[in-house]
Length: 277
Image: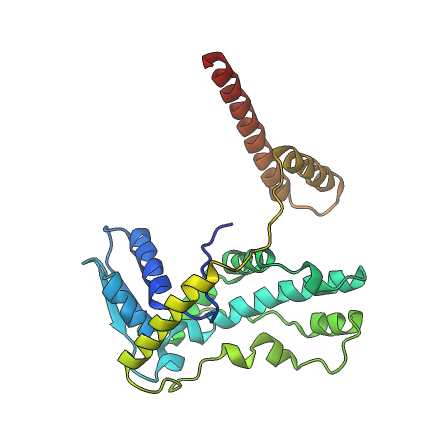
């Protein structure tokens, strides 16, 4: 799908997940360039560095205490953009479900949530947004002025969903976009880092055994034949519909050729295996 997913019952970062992310980050950077990685001093982050220390070409700098809202580029608009585009897809899904007299919660799945957030990251959170947020954080000196990309306006879509679902007393749109339980307030941590670290560790050990017992819903597995048939529908639509960009048609055709070649390769391999047997 283009992303890695990890979870626990608290929906909270811990040192083991963070250490896994760090190792993937180190591998992504490689050894040919020098990189500065800034992080807040959340106990899960600091403990992860002990598990997965950085290579010599990667330097880690900890943001000052209670300064995340000012210096963390993610908090300058990157997270807000990601959440807005993710929830736009959720609203669109709800609207289609209500219009078809379905309850969206009956068809919502983890697979869809992952698909939406990965799509939002790759297609909607632009390089310009990320660049501007780094400049706004003042981590990078001498800011350049670039056009600001506004967040998508969801007011109309939100109203359509409420009307289609006959929802009364709907929550405010701002609360929908930014639920209170998703906001971590600075200064929320009480006690020493060691105390919090031990608490996180204890939670992780307990969750690790409980998580194995959770049953995950099975996702449908599509055959290559079904994928090729779906592509034929898409190609036919793109060819007959005015206003469809040629690039989209080329993408469908490129993927169709990929599947055709893959199918031929599998058939050839099957013939070879039979001959050897």
